[in-house]
Image (cartoon, rainbow, N blue to C red; front, side, top):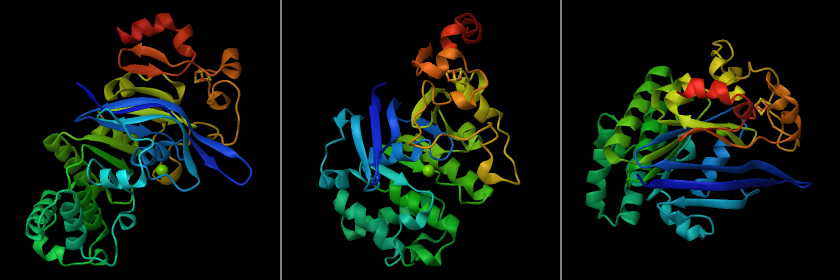
Length: 331
Ligand code: SF4
Ligand code: MG
């Protein structure tokens, strides 16, 4: 199948007064229609920056230094703010962790749902209202007609999240970006929303890029998984490959990280040490200071991305030296 999204050698920098920080260091990946790619990694690995780059919403001190982002074959980089504005909500939508960042507190739910439909889909007010009611029903909101008249603050957190999903889906985007969209919700609502997104993905055939640090969520929804570490993609592959045959030591660490119920925030940090800061220039493999398998070459040379199977890659020198093992594990 043709790729819906193609990201090639994407490099994103952040300017500070003194220097230029390299937040994303030349990553490449692709996504097919109807596929969910989960981007995982610890805070600050570049996963959110990657999704914000795709939708053209980097913070003002961020800049795309190099690379290419193509949606359905069309280059997104270099588009004007106007052109991007048309694409947002139309071809690409984004769901954020905190619904209030996407909802305007001063307008009713109805107004906010109708607007994009009237602008992007050229619907009349009546058509847009009908479609809004359908959308609210689709995301499982009771009494949708009444909800259209309410303001965001009149709804619970879970309902607001559903409204935001309805908004994101209103124009039937071909690509949905979701950045930890369920982290702030309780477990039951989280499960309902994940199920709903999956169902809608199937019905509408959209591609989904889902950013999360929660491997439980990944297991639930991913078709493919991309593991990022310190601005680089260290492993990417089908979800069953990543869970059953992880190759990169960092991925193995993430999978071994058992959620610590007492310490939600740090539950991935049981890999000893912490991720380097953006301005730390580390020789060789950026994971080497934390890697239990680090070899001489790892301290000197940044690893090549090795092809483990046709759809599985790992950026680690172990792929080269354990060729024999690899044949055993992949056969
Ligand atoms: Fe560890 Fe070396 Fe692989 Fe980096 S390249 S993850 S240091 S074994
Ligand atoms: Mg983030």
